[in-house]
Amino acid sequence: MLDTNIDIDLINKRMVSWTASQRISWALKNLPKQHIVSTSFGAQAAVMLHLMTFHKPDILVVFIDTGYLFDETIEFSKHLTSTLNLNLKTFRPLLDREKYEKKFGKVWENGLEGLELYNQNRKVEPMQRALNDLHAATWFSGIRKEQSPTREQKMFVELSNNRYKVSPILDWTSEDIDSYIKDNSLEYNPLWHKGYISIGDTHTTKSIYEVESIEQTRFFGLKRECGLHE
Image (cartoon, rainbow, N blue to C red; front, side, top):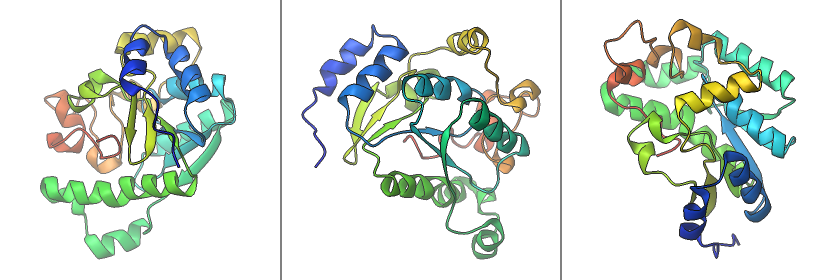
């Protein structure tokens, strides 16, 4: 049974003045195992992976390969897995692309309802399966408040579905990210340099040069979240 006696409100208040490394160190010491960190190998993924493997080199790294990722993202995943010696665990949807489209068609083109179904099938379900199969009790993520309105309401430590979720860089700005990448000789996903500021699947991701607003760079501007962190 998961220990839920930790005073989450108190620890969140304390974490406001802590560094990301201090938050990670505390969580690894005080929150229950199994510890995992999720990654999309998106634009700034190297930051969170570098931080986590510094504190726990063998931490399980969960990656959801939707089957519709950019080739650059797949190559970036291989690069970071090698350079950071990641203990990578890749999970995929139950249906491959051909079988999925035969059953649902290009459902992501069917407005908000279609996007919700697609994200549930290709992202949320594999992630939940990963958390269950790996017996994850504490999930670290690299989400940040400035990324979307929904994330502005997040806390450093949350308890949901009998599992702790920790967001050590929640209050980091884009400038903080850039500085960390430079200071530690890390790299952005190659697509970042082509104007892709938020990177997901090929059919629902646009570069900043293809759209009129930042909101339109993901999911046609209909939503920002894929469902994993809602």
